[in-house]
Length: 410
Image 1: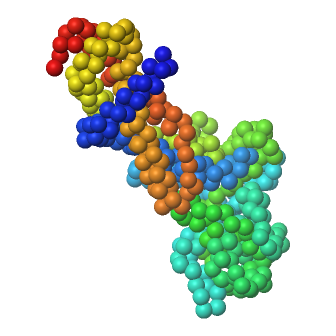
Image 2: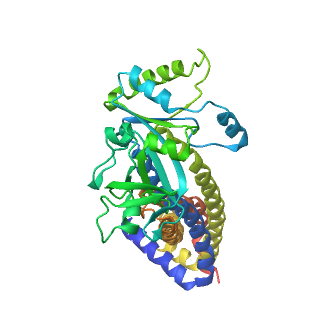
């Protein structure tokens, strides 16, 4: 049987090289089908891994409380959330006082698209100014490259100090010590007390272009009417659910939400963000799958056609094999293996092209290259199935040929 399989593989490869144009057209359908699904799965898997790494940076013991959800769909939803009362610094401070389970409750405000100036140089308008209390810095577990982070005294006394992200350090201070230097943000001077380590990119966007300043200073510069965000850290993962329940109950009380009415704020966890991202990408995956199925069916019909032609062309050969003792089963196996080899060659071409294309997209978006092993295995199994499915009929037709009639065939 093993010898027969290897002999069938040789015959299949010989058939491909003998009838080049016909083989190329047949293999092209298989290749397109596998290419369409592998390129999408490779690109999405690379993006998904990068997004999950970012979401996990929230911390497995943390959850975020916001006025708006992480993802919104359509103007109706935006209007619904916009009419909610803002989360305020005062409510956040009261929440810290009346809850016992959280290890820390960070309170923050933000404003993006700002420009930072140092001497005669300035950044692009892409800096995120982040007003925070001491707990906020703790919950995000930001690590320092040098200097120190915000202290309780900095926040309590509204000192004009800041800790800069690595992107600003890279722009201005690679050759000089930044500690103690002054930068200007929206015409306000801030003294640098520390630099945070590099956090990297997400979908080509830097996570290091930010400035952290005391929360009170942020309110003075940008106003107090903005909504705030609370980042709550549980003492450990086992206490996360209990901490969430306590904080939600306390916040509903502080915001006077009636019993039975839904929360007028959003709870965001890293698991929820990952789940929402997966919900978005499943439609792209489904679309790629549909395209792949259509292409593979068309390719399968092409394989059946090329195999039927092959049976006709090799009728005399089949007659000789049957005359010297080849069984129907052996003939069937020969043609089924040939059909599988044809589909696998096309599948491998499609998979290789899909991997190159998907990772090219990933590189353009600034995310890590990835090889979706599971989808490659699925692709190879699907192409084998297509080869068997569309090779069975030609194989049966070949095995049922009468050896005497086959030997007479010209």
